[in-house]
Amino acid sequence: MTDFIYAPPDAAPVILHEDHELVLVDKPAGLLSVPGKGAHLADCMIARLRVGFPEILLVHRLDLDTSGVMVFARTPHAQRHLGLQFEKRQTSKTYIARVAGQVEQRSGRIDLPLGVDWPNRPRQMVCHETGRPAQTDWALIRHEAGTSRLRLMPKTGRSHQLRVHMLAIGHPILGDPLYASGAALAYPRMMLHAKQLRLRHPDGGRGLTISAEVPF
Image (cartoon, rainbow, N blue to C red; front, side, top):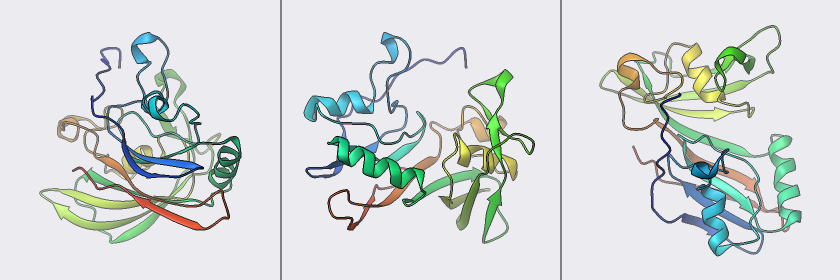
């Protein structure tokens, strides 16, 4: 990706929910979650949020090319509470993806360990020797003109997990700049969206479910 040019969208952050502990936003595709290396990569979701919420703290990330629901903390307590939920897999995440080809089964689970593809970083790869366990449940929503729309429910949170798992079963995510090729690459954006996040609120533990409309 040596020819990568960072040109994030200009739109102001879309706030899905805010209270004294949390801010949940709909991150657009093409915007970094956190700053990259260098001044040209300083514009990101957390920097934009700090204009209105200077106390904001990071909890998790979405890939540059992925859109959808992100949660940020407004207090150190909330950051710790949410961080433990992610670490212990107590959150529930649902993504929508469009993938190449027609997926024939109605649903399934992908259970393939993942690790860094060191010569080709930041790419990840299936690695049965040294990879970390990774599971993704999926369900077919419908077929669309030779492609498939899927609901993806990751059970682990490995880097690029959904992207590599889809590639591994022969159905790369459309528009994926790292893992798609040929006709599957010829899309204006990566067709992966974090549709819904379910978590426990740091103040009292009540359930909170936040969704963001799928933009494709």
